[in-house]
Image 1 (cartoon, rainbow, N blue to C red):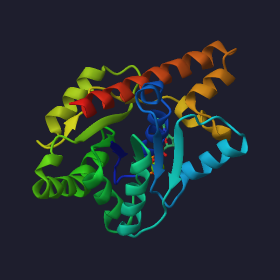
Image 2 (cartoon, protein in one colour):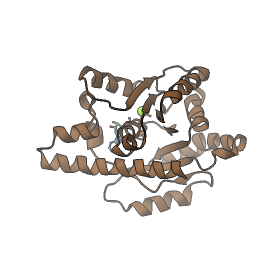
Image 3 (cartoon, rainbow, N blue to C red):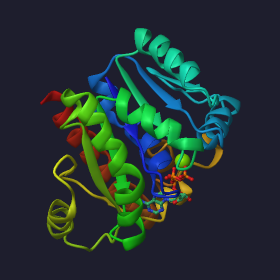
Image 4 (cartoon, rainbow, N blue to C red):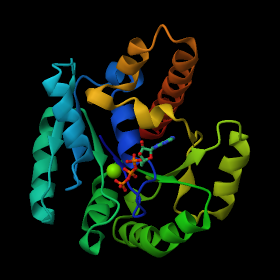
Length: 237
Ligand SMILES: Nc1ncnc2c1ncn2[C@@H]1O[C@H](COP(=O)(O)OP(=O)(O)OP(=O)(O)O)[C@@H](O)[C@H]1O
Ligand SMILES: [Mg+2]
């Protein structure tokens, strides 16, 4: 199974979601081996993983792979090789790349493509102008890919009514893209948890004596587990 986080617009939470769903209890329990793959030459996750290694943190059934090539054949071969040894691959795709090469590849190659998107005209027009034409073309060539493109409303105010946001996206999205039944709320903990290569759960342990912080982490863990479960439900369909 291959799940990718894709959005041609930068800073919508792709890398944050990739790491956290990968390390979720839901995924760790469901899959015997998981590969977190970063196709982003920027190397956000590569640096984070290096810090984990420096701190000798446990990675369990999760491995990390960074493919920085800009040649489609190189990352296609790389993913094929990783897929032979892993039950689940989670791919972090760069926002910008020449000819949207990585985005095209991920959309065509994944069992599920998740598009984190804000309720902003900026994000909506980036989707309509850049991503939707790619999705349409892939479905035209490979009709079996229809049903594999989902928007995940991101940076949602924690107090916002989730069902309203999901309804909003289902109204505006074109036929071949659905909205997930979960949202990714804005929480400051997502900006802070990953210092020194920590995962959300490890960060939770490090602040366990600080009630206010711990409560925030618990909420974030709950968001992520629900997003991971929602991913599994889609994959199992
Ligand atoms: N739900 C969230 N709440 C608050 N901050 C968040 C959330 N998700 C991500 N962030 C922060 O927003 C910034 C962008 O997130 P991230 O790097 O995951 O986006 P991205 O889509 O991978 O960006 P790029 O396109 O540059 O690769 C980071 O500083 C991250 O810590
Ligand atoms: Mg990123």
